[in-house]
Length: 350
Image (cartoon, rainbow, N blue to C red; front, side):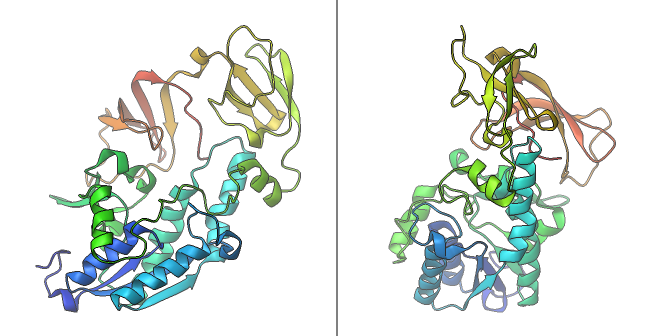
């Protein structure tokens, strides 16, 4: 049994590595190559990378493609760049725009993993004769009594399981995450020791198709007329001001509301897209102890028990897990009952 769990030699085991051009995926490829696996690098062109070549901290930009190619050459491995722009537009960018129009706060990196990287790219890896697809994500894949399981990374600050919630059992059987048990500092040290040019490259921070950080501007460009003005009202419906489009607001937002003269700070409590209304209120109005979730991806072999199950939930990628109970709603979703009310839970899906 080799290091990836296959009953054959590493040289007989082909692994496609999703190479983003960053340090994590580069080290993933280097480690597998060092262990003797038949490694093939694949980089996805997801967006108009030409416009983002010089932008530091971007993801899926033209510089990233160049960096991935340089790493592959350094390691002496095949490398392919695949044009997935049309797929990315339909599966991620359009969803992003429609979500904001509906008053939701989308997470495009989740959609990208769910609908592009772990669906389309996984199929491409199989077409290339791969036994596995490896990525530089910080999560752990462990073998349990009922098959592969998805676990949080060993270094809590780097854990990316939040963005991979939609990974299915079938996909987990094919995926490998070599960095899940390593701290980020060790990954960078390995990159330097291996002579990889990306060893000091900053981590991606931006959404690749939001070049200046202005989500609202991107949505308006994608959906002309999306920024329709409307009223900002309090919980009793009293008009406090005007806004230039609900696409510029999200639940829990305090700054940039454009209203003053109130005795206490106000926060966005609710968005009403049909009425083009932004509802604001005190911080206490943000607290909720029940969250309805859709697209439930239950990875355990046994179904969610009828009485629910005690769990830990993350409501934001950077937030510590919160104690809760999850109960099936009988329609493919669930209710999350929080032990302690949490603030500013924003809807992200339909």
